[in-house]
Image 1 (cartoon, rainbow, N blue to C red):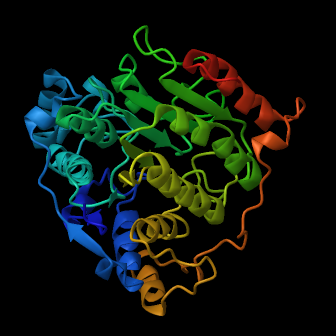
Image 2: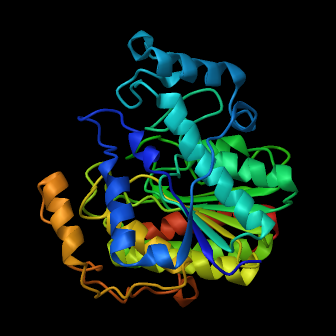
Length: 390
């Protein structure tokens, strides 16, 4: 197995563009790629452009009629009127939508193939993580569910246990739905509570279908959760479940929209806590999955201040050359940010909260603490189904 990491990248993924007024601005992808280069990380990874996912691959997760609808809307965006979730405010149709969505999906599928076959130990597709797309509909800025497709491809290649960890601020509903009744896939999602955020799913009681009880895990965090609570929740649930499941491959989704500057959600997590969880996922892959790690992007709408830094940290960790938080950001990148976005770029790779302090679950449960209540609800719902103590 190659010890090098792969960075999946094709410049054409920046064509995933819902228009100038949509929060998912593709500049976040372009600026991340430039920041990766500014730190010289492109020399520490193999930069690979995979082919777009073909129809047979898309149909591992998506219905044939839905793929046909995406193609039709892609060819004639003006005719899309909301059928299959396409042509809505969240998912407006645009020319070439099918092609670029299939390209992003292809990068995640290619990452999964590379890791499974041993061509790379880690593979990153920060353009991916489009976890809301359902088998038969678009949802939440997501057309094709590249995360689910990557997992489905791993299963097709012979994987018997794949764990999926989703730390986006929104529930990983599409991936959960795709494998709801499949005991070969463990889905774990930490997200803002569905009472206060789209997609209003991801309750602790959602634990998997009749043939896979305990295979879906949902930690629904109270609005306002900050670094200490977010990292505490992660460590109170995820490592124990991964140790029990012992996946052959770890697939993780790193939406940057948990950040306190993100305009679409209500958590208060810093870049430094995001980096801490990225490192924890890397370590879990090595401890339990032979190092096989597929890491994806996701949401994130502070497109200059947060997303490029967060996902550059992710690439650096996968490359085996983590960037120290206090590192000064190269001036050339900061100038490019101003030229492209007319915004002042951040100066360092930290929000000034490193190291992130948190108390482990073993330190005790506080029944009056809303964060601890959320963690215990998840543990009580799932742990007994897996033969674990809540």
